[in-house]
Image (cartoon, rainbow, N blue to C red; front, side, top):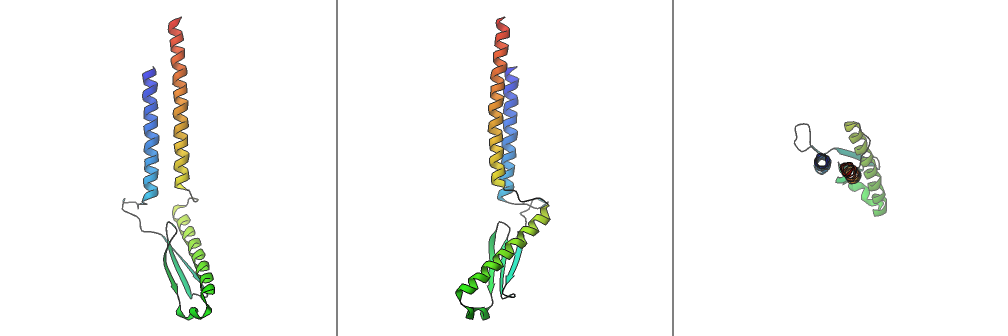
Length: 144
């Protein structure tokens, strides 16, 4: 009986470990339906009536910033403000595209993985306590 419980605990631990590995693999490299690396999703943003354009890609990285040379006369501080506005617009665009493509609210894979690890640790501790209690009951029954 105790061996069956130990084997069951080991299988549960293996399944939860595999689920965490798959989650981390998904987080590390998004794939398309064929298993190939997915093309990054791009978000576009503009400011200053299109004189500043920013492109961001999935993962929140800035891919490209284009500033029309005519804007250079306005000074560095103004240009930086426009770049910030265009970047924020591009990030908003990216979020809406990712949300529409996945139809899932933003999920933090790292937080989900940490929660899964906590769940695994907790379940293993509880299963161990149950196993100990069952072993004690069996030992007492044999002693009667």
